[in-house]
Length: 117
Length: 116
Image (spheres, rainbow over the protein chains, first blue to last red):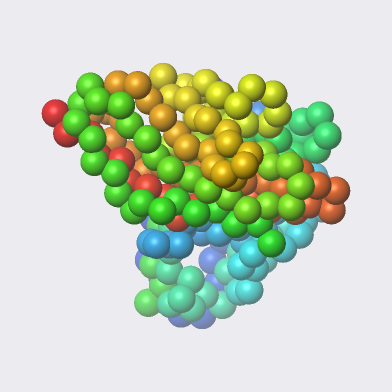
């Protein structure tokens, strides 16, 4: 089954304790991205990657890191989490279409709910 | 900068009645427009997209959307609502112009509630 898998689904942790949220897709998609979803704000992109070893900042990258060493995996790293990073996080992937990535729909994981105390 | 507005936080409709969820956008050049649906505790699922061509786009689960360039709108519609359509709906835009961002912009979402 084609899917984007995120782990963990839920995490409660404390300020300053490094954490990693994993994301893996089995569709051989070139493009992967991370979003956070906050009430009243919709989805905002944190980082994206257009292929292995190619990452770039989205709208809200501060306090986050990513890496893309393999095509299927795109982990999100919070080196020193803070309470304002409490949110619902989504990983997504898409194909490169004719003319680029912009005309392709994204496939989303089921989300990771992070609570940072 | 590109932007998306979903002017209604919530839309209520009776089962069997037509529904409309509104979306307007602002983008440089021609837009790529998308609708997604989110059910509780799930990620977003793609419904339909407008890239070019016919202004009326048909998608999954009987949904359709009408692209109106002059009004910069992309409203989501369904002729007959089902209780199971109750969910959170997101409109998204990506600019098509050269130098346009790969970063899609999402609206804040509209909660659709279909009453039996």
